[in-house]
Amino acid sequence: MSILLALLFLLIGDTTPDRHKTVSVDLPVAKNAVLQADALREDAMRVAVARDGRIFFRQTNIGPDELATSIRKALDEGSKRKIFLAVDRRAKNGDVRVALEQIQISGITNVVILTIEPRRP
Image (cartoon, rainbow, N blue to C red; front, side, top):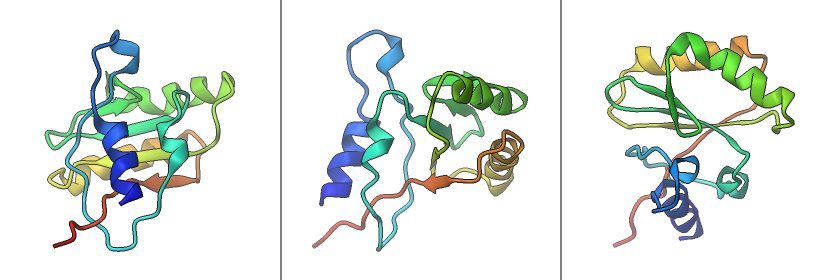
């Protein structure tokens, strides 16, 4: 239940200026999801792959070729060496592969794939 609450806060857009908006994706379901409280931090490096293939770094839509540079810049500014990857369950594997390749090029090896727990009856 706590993972659902954390992900709910992560995915809810708010009415404050654009810097706090999040990208909404339909996350996959995993039985053994583990709470990732760091994913809620404002300075967390979140990469989202939308079902239409668009890639977002934090809340900014960027081209795939810009992702590695954006990650390196965030690292230079002191971000933790961890990526939280939110992939829409209907995204194409090729689009996810492109994002993962760019994350690897940036030098990050710690990638957390965000999921949600199944609903309980």
